View 1 (cartoon, rainbow, N blue to C red):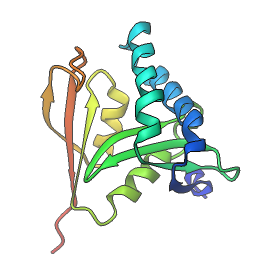
View 2: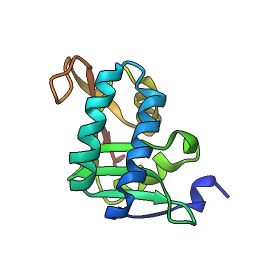
View 3: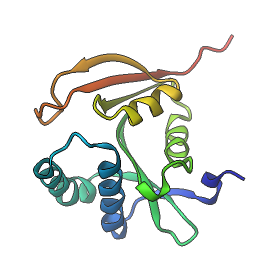
Length: 155
């Protein structure tokens, strides 16, 4: 049995906000080494106060209903995919992504260029780089790779 098989997917609830912030924080600390401490603090404040309480997420929870990863999306675009640092490698990112891709022909995602782990994860799952932006969506100097996955045509 794969580790991911021990997890269930469900919609996030308000009670998940604190844990999802912990998921976000540990994931970012493990992969976003390019962020300065002030950047991490200002982005973290926005994530905790504005993003997590107001967006819809799918969470991967364990048998105790504790979130280990979350996925935020809009239409066919992945807005956020974070896995708790202690749960990396358990297949949770793929579990969330595969669930989201079901029934879709195209999925897009934007990834920090300075986070090669994330770019490699998406490339391994069939995403291709389609463009690059010099600045992130907040105008900060963190280049973004625009990536796209297309379902293989069936004959």
